Image (cartoon, rainbow, N blue to C red; front, side, top):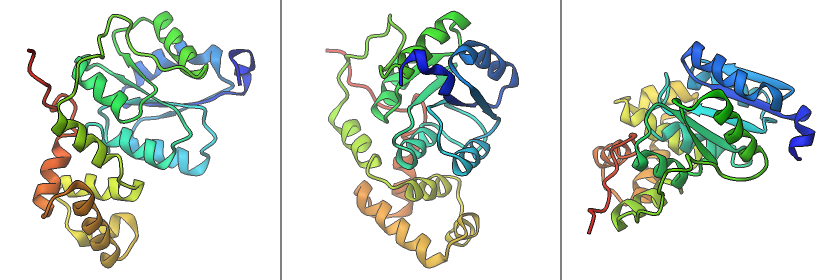
Length: 223
């Protein structure tokens, strides 16, 4: 599909700020036949569960129901064919690098004007990645961080959800209720998470999960 075929595009805007959703909608209205808005991460996932034929998701990095990069991780694991562009007020280069590491197709700072947002969205719809042109993404990531990014990337969508809930302090029984599964299933997910992250306890898993918070990633010191 090309920009010439844009009448067929379906876009999902997931952001908890109505005014910014309006700005994004204005930026992308010429590119899509349908634009669905979601004010929370749960609303966004519900929209995708009901109909996953979206061509692009514009995802706020921090919104109700999601913490740090976990929402991006979940969407990329659950819907790998749908490009996700992160929109955020956090313009820290480390945050943008991590978004791209976790599979984002682009990063739009909320400070961009509507015309620049439109350029970014068009680039991603055309199959390219887009980040602010003045951003240097060449800084190497330290080995420890790279390994953790890789391990987190092996989690299944359900394991990402369980890890998110562990980070919120929920017990197995509570997680089982939220996910409508048995406690035995949750225990199996927790065991798999520990194995994939290379840790031995729930506490260590939560500590690892805390490192998917925006801006909390250690960067290699400048030489």
